Length: 368
Ligand SMILES: *Cc1c(COP(=O)(O)O)cnc(C)c1O
Image 1 (tube, rainbow, N blue to C red):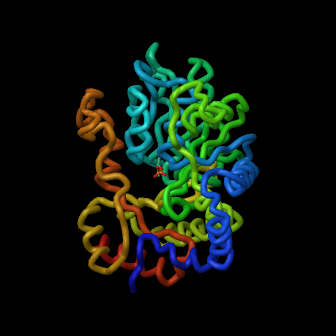
Image 2: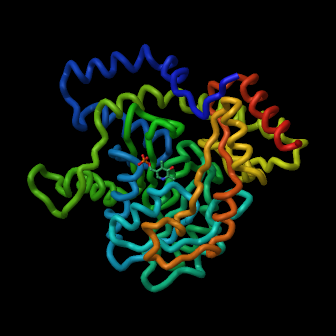
Image 3: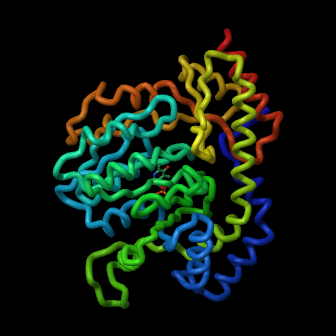
């Protein structure tokens, strides 16, 4: 039985009838840049997330860049984040000329350890960038208390966490700015690259809006040097068509995660992901931990079961960040996670039989 890590075709089948006329309408009107489709998406997303403003942009990476720029973070500043995340988190910090300062992760959740943040605060620290990795939120309450105490800004990397909740509120509504991605493999993906920033601060919203179009609110008049970081009308329309399905798709992911948990329950060789009691996990990835990860990965490949390692090399060990001065062993839990974790197929349209086949294959292999 073939089980891909992600198959977007069954999702497309559910939206095809609605999305094609939307796309055709834009093509017929030849209005590709911003406009009513983007305005509509921004309103819908603000309602969905529960925030005052959102602003569509060109990618999750550019959402992070816009957020850093809007908060005046740049050369000489430090931003505290996790080394166990997608590259863009720290990449965007470096791109604005700031320095990423890492804290290790909690091995049980793979999320940054909030109790380690104060240890790395210096007079140069300007912000904290928590990453709601795999679809579960960082402990935002203590994090916000630290930010308040030290007068730091908070940028949430919610690229993997749309609809994820912490204490009843959505990811991306806790910090100064929340950053989302519509990359196709995220829970709410478009037909290419796209992203979004959210904020409850109207002044920040205006600043972000200007930064999205070369730093000028009035065309050809520039207050500052911004980016070309707009979302296409076509991509905004795709996201709008998908949004009403998101809650059901999330439930599908949660159902598959619960089924895996049940099927791995009696196998001590497989450590399953945990959902914290005050969180609503959206399982952008369902990530297990096993001892012989690479052997298991190869075995699953032979059985035509898709799986992937997120992420095989922690950011403090990346060549491009050598100048940060970290070395192997500095963040042992991140390094251990990079060596032992494996993401399994969890997308909502998987059949029960497929999930059972994946679990049975893993159980048979690890018990050998
Ligand atoms: C996907 C992702 C991003 C970047 O989003 P893009 O839309 O691919 O630029 C940033 N941070 C995390 C944690 C991500 O998973």
